Length: 104
Image 1 (tube, rainbow, N blue to C red):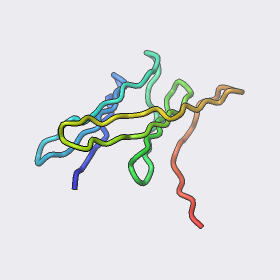
Image 2 (image 1 turned 180 degrees about the vertical axis):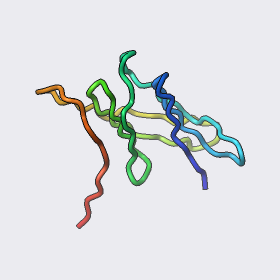
Image 3 (image 1 turned 90 degrees about the vertical axis):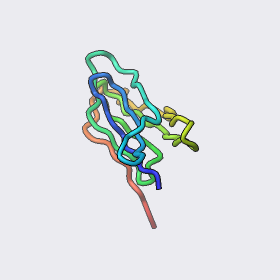
Image 4 (image 1 turned 135 degrees about the vertical axis):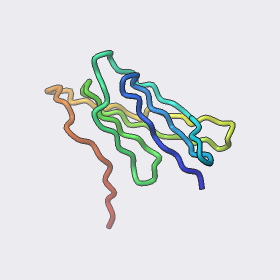
């Protein structure tokens, strides 16, 4: 079973998807966030299937990404922006973000 880790370089506003191969970690993909120089990441959460990434940023946006994992060791992971959410009325910052699983 492959083990992946999400590593954040907040000063560069870049996320790296790393795969553990033996004792080493190999970069399999990266996501550079479109943030202003004075903005930063305040919170990161993933869904229970590890296929979606929700990022809370100080620029008052929540960004939802789909993670496309590599199918082979030669491929790179991709991050697809699904949506960006903003409080368009008051432009308040989001305090918290998370995924909920609703069941019957």
